[in-house]
Image (tube, rainbow, N blue to C red; front, top):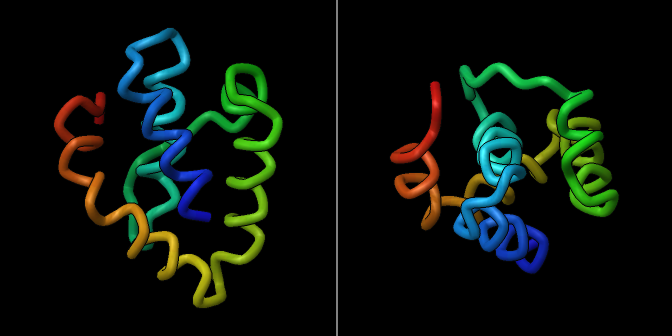
Length: 86
């Protein structure tokens, strides 16, 4: 999970056309997130493994995996929110 998150953070930092989508993907999966997302845009702009990772996370959002995800993303949250279009 940590490697996948780091890879996605690099894409956000690269400031490409997919950066905003990846930022939304990462922020929207946080517990109690109010970010709205467009999953079809994720599927179109994200790498298949990244999309599958997020889809798996959605399916397991009722488990402790979502809190593990939040813990791993914690050090990036301020950076992600700073540039987010909320």
